[in-house]
Length: 189
Image 1 (cartoon, rainbow, N blue to C red):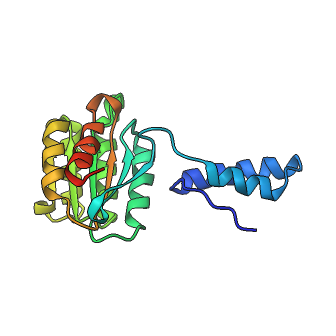
Image 2 (cartoon, rainbow, N blue to C red):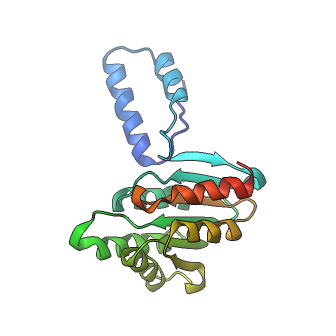
């Protein structure tokens, strides 16, 4: 029997496998496990897959962000087929004294992900993310730092094309959900 879910990413896979292990330990029939797995859906703005016209797909993970989760989301983006892979990454808030270095670490991960375009949103830490991506080998013309989510929404809407896959991730206070809303408006979602 095959078990499938619409949840994306290794973190969700690990959680699902753990739940399956517990369910089988308690003699839950595999058919019930498979049916429940197929019904799983992400919470709003937490890894939602939004399919828009023109084959544009948005991974809306705009509810919250931390370095580990953002790097995992970049891994999902890097391993997914698309005409182009675009990431809009908002500043990760509440990281304390290590904020700049943690953002730079994510910037290096963005460069390794082979992105076609990286838009960073927020203050100096988000700027450090953009700078680190360029220092790690991303073409500087494919990296833009923007101060606000409204600016990022405009940049994303004017940059996204048919068949693109767009990851939108950031701390709630940065309001990267505005980028998702603008893409829905621009691409009929």
